[in-house]
Image (cartoon, rainbow, N blue to C red):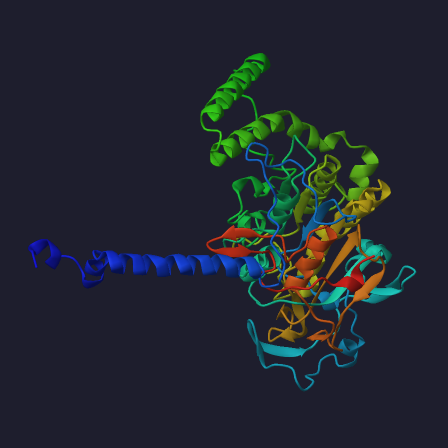
Length: 496
């Protein structure tokens, strides 16, 4: 054996033999053929359904696309309350909390998320029957209470975590970890938008700042960047859209036209470069937003009765700013924006009931403060959409990451996190009005009937938009990824 052969491994030397080479190659080709046959005979995802990946033109990623099936809802307004609002003090009436107030019934844990537990506490606000349905709603939210006949309540929601960052991630992306696409990104990836001058997905942050998970709540994750939510608010318009005073409108237009021609010529040389096409599309959208955004943000041009109805003045400064955000949300929906996510509360460093609904202490004061900000403007927004006939095609989602405990913490003034049961509601296109689904136990401690996971909830939202959650997917790192992972069932009982 010569020196060259000694440097070759045993397995490599076998391939130098013609007979061994053809033997190995034949077996490899047979394996490849078998894998192709198996792939053709087997379902392409675990549910037995073939994935549906929308056909997206790189140079026009926002163009409208057909849903998987016809559905009433064409747009979504998600009103998200970071910090976890207390269900037993708002929409989930539990008379046993009054009966056992100040006691410790058997079965209650000694320790919860933030430490030792205290005694059962009755609701901090009185409940009354509302509307024709007689739905029991608390005085904490009197304006929303008046609209109870329009809402479809989920009283048996459960989640996988009792921590805020993970809870926000899970509710908004379907995963407790970061890096996954948000609900709004999935919807706009699937459906695009009919609007050509504004983003397809807008996130309106609370006047106090971002929620705990920040931009992950409206991020695109591994979906194309075009489907990330664009965040701005009535107080903070999109950055870098204003024309410098030193540049005239005509010169600005000429520069934009020249850039567009140069980009088009560049794209002709590289017609299959999807990243380049998407980048050009984003630049063109930004150019259109220079004129469309000032118009949509002209809230001062709204009639006086709208400002009064929404509560722009006459309350706290934060309420006024949030009210303006609610008006902005309506104006965006009117312009055809597909998904608007409106945040009520922030939590960049742990709000503890001051900047959001996380009332671990003095819930009587902190929840009242948050409700003063949220209730009137939110109710006015829903009523305004209804009055304009927009609820026929708009799905409203009012939600939070988990609930709060029926007993107090050891400090005796706040309620701890409760992932075992909580309440959210839907309204508008495709859902039953004045309807309640699921039930918590007699104390509002755990789900008792018809539990609904976050996966189920998101599956139902996608269904209401005409999307099959088992088929809407994106191939990423060898996996057909979905908003609902490998879980989720549509809650059919809430559908019209």
